[in-house]
Amino acid sequence: MQQARKPQSAGPSWQAVLWPMLVLAVGAALAFVSTAAGAVVILVGYIWLATQSLSLALAVYVIASPFPFGLVVHKHHIDISDIMAIIMAVRLLVDTVKSHKASLWERFLGSPFWRPLALLLILSILSLATALSHSTTLIKILEYVEFFVVVVAVARQAGLRESAWKPVVAALFGIAAVLSLYGLFQFLFQIGPAANVVDVHHVRADAVFGQPNAFGGFEAMVFPLVAALLAYGPAWARGWWTWVVAGLTAIGVIDSFSRGAWVASVAAVFFMAVLAWAARGRQMVNRRFVIPAVLLPIVLFGVVDLLGKTNLSHSALALSYQTTGERLRSTVTALFNPRGHFDTNQRLLIWKAAIDALRQHPILGVGLGGFTRYVTLHPMPGLAAPPPMAHNLYLEWGADLGVLGVVAGLWLEWSWIRTAVKSVVSRARSLSSFEFAMGIGAFGTIVSFVVHDWVDFMIDHGVVVPLLLALALVWALSGGRQRTGGSE
Image (tube, rainbow, N blue to C red; front, side, top):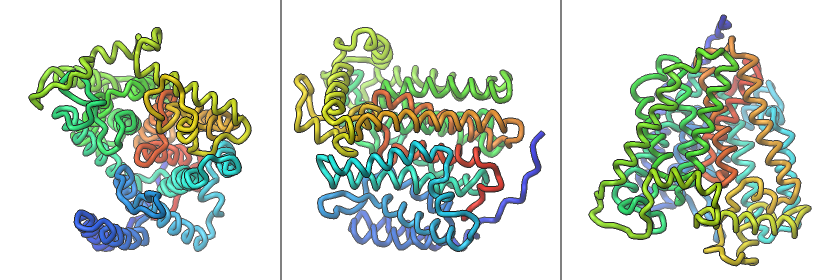
């Protein structure tokens, strides 16, 4: 039997947030004329909004984070979402000091996974001693603090309250749907580089992420949350709009043609079903789960395959004749004959370069974010071009931070999964439909990240946001209701 719910605290009135939202809108329009002027107006509106509602400020951050919009300072690009994170951190800091209900440690770092996170951050700071590029490493450290400390802490302040999560969920689902529509447009009309061509007449979608694997990874981490709400969520979360978002996010995963995203999505859905079964019995793996999580993606895969046979651009890029179905088959055959597949062979060379970096710098690595610099200075024979990453989280952190970087990665991900499973199973009967759905969805998002990061590296602006929200949900689920309230 579900426990009685305490009255949820009322959020700010719509009049209180209307004016700052209008200022944000004016700033966004002005940015098309002047980037600097638009950014200033946006930040003024954002500071105003953050003083009224931390949840709405987080929602705006979620929308802004995928876009590379910002300013260049000393040759380094600073996204406007980075500054938004600083503003949210200040608001949460002030609230914590004023309320005296929790310490700064409890607010920002008191998660169930603080130990491996602390190891990661300490190693990142120590890697400055051996960094190939100190400025790159310093920027990466600040990014990790933004992602895994600030954003997770801010999102966790929503606790398990539907009223606080609704705008954040709406923002995440909305931006995922919009980016997926843009990605579908790219796929249909060859809006992208020739290097991304697929199925003769089309290109792999990458939306605003600049890379199809990143786009596919983002959509693959959003999809479990959508599917879980459709399967187990309250009535308001199972409307037609959620079905539309589910369809669009699934299409985004498919037309990215990211093998990592495909495999990660399958793994996420499978283990979500296992967790739901373990928590509340096999009756939870019913048609309400199977239709959106399994059947819908299969049908849409067939739709994308059919669209791939249609030449809407009235031209053909003859670099690749691989169809959707053939790419699916090659996902399997590449495992048994990796050197017979160009992409897989390139991955193997990149991984070899990362292992070489780890061997040469086993203690502190080449500095957080330094692998790209290393592989540029030590080119690997046969590698087409220096990669932007190691295409493997564990090898990336191994090259960047040494042997303990690999330990930190495995420990961190194990703590995420363990905490998510334990929290959902131990409290399964007392969770509301919203809480249970978000718990299952957050677990699926974490699984998607873990699986995909064996062949890619999904820690980047915008891409990592679904994971950060999932970690906040797991933190809230593990902490009980009495400690999860926070600033509205």
